[in-house]
Image 1 (tube, chains in turn yellow, cyan):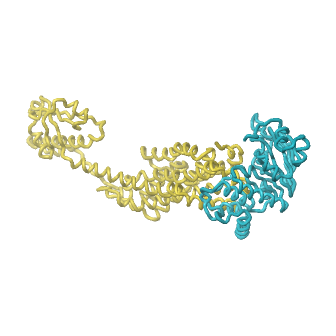
Image 2 (cartoon, rainbow over the protein chains, first blue to last red):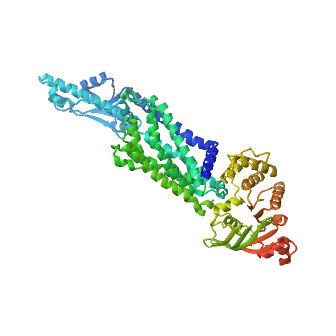
Image 3 (cartoon, rainbow over the protein chains, first blue to last red):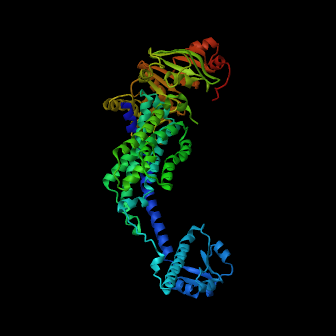
Length: 392
Length: 244
């Protein structure tokens, strides 16, 4: 086994001196993802605020048919604009997000106490116009409610009769559990970090060694090939693990600064939670290191290996994306699915739920089994002479 | 002491090595001479057990590379065609890595590197990272790395490739020293002068087969030529490779 530790020590020393390795594993992921995320949240929050605070400018056709509605809209802060000549064209060309058209039969229907027709002309497929449209519809609904209850009162009927059911929210979510709404992406980021943290080393220790022509002399040493490969994989795992740990620490520092507004979330990650997350995700680092080493061993050069890696990064993304798009209740059998189980478990951990020990066990065991099978395959790969000499 | 009998290695239809036999004795320098692509490197790779032979027998001090791979690797010092140093490690770290892989302890590695730094004149660059080393410096480090565990048998693949005159002289001097210490040295080359200057026995390989083998004088006699170069051309039966 001394060969294995010698290889491990040498790879660690060599890669610590490699700026590219340090940058990729220890800086890029841990700094970039958290900063990117918080930056994006700030941007979204401020854009949303701006949109909400912006006065609603509304071109109206047929304003003369409904003076009381117009007055109501103006009282609520809407700036009413003159009727445009080509409302459909204006909306289509995005000059205005929407146009309100009051139909000529409005006064007649209004007088008869029948629903008086107004049209909101808009293109909801334009996401940026959704906020003003929602705002306008809210105003119209509010006006309708107000007039409706006034009419009932005039006829001596209590408006309460028109609301037979009163719905009250009993909110059982806690500040901790609401946090998952903001950090649903965290499992996804961690999963990717396990892979990105391992990528450079997996390539450098295999394809890179082949490209620099140092593999052949190395294999002439009296050390079994599986020990050499395992030493290399171990280095890759350690770097991936360090990358994960740093990312978690960096999230712990950055998360409390998230602009979560009025949601009342508790975004602090306790040390215990942090360690539990690291425990849950560690087998993924092993799986990633083994898988990437296995693939990179087939490549003749660093560049060729790089071209495979672009596709491999999809593997950790798929389960995370499924989970984000379609959140499902965690169940025991799901703990046997590598990558997916980590998503679920980290979600539960962030919500501060109690998780059964057996779930940890299943998730760790199933991922480790696959990781070790891949590692065993990678470890014996260089027993094939073809792979040693296949230089470009 | 190396004994090779009827060694064969085919890659698909290509008969890279097709029935090579020779001997390399202790205290002698044996040269594998042949044009590029004659099968020299493939033969050496089978000797240091990186490639399994398709047929034939190899004995190095009585050991068989196909069965005693680990044991053979301990007795061999190999300077392969690809020098492949680690550019982010210093020359000393490169050499010491191989010493550790051979299971040597720290103290004997340090002592060994000290003495080889003297022998190979590496004091100027022993603690520099190998990035940007000249060919001569690279070969010296590659040799030191291969010799760190004091192997009895030394295999060198085109050792003087890319070296200038001074470095080549130093290299030859070192190889003669190994011979004087009683090592068995095998070097492959396509350079005539090298063989003439160094080798006690010459094995001429062409198209995967041994075309002739003997001392320089024997080869001259057998071909009836005056110079080794003419003898070489006559023995391999063509001029190919000489210009390479």
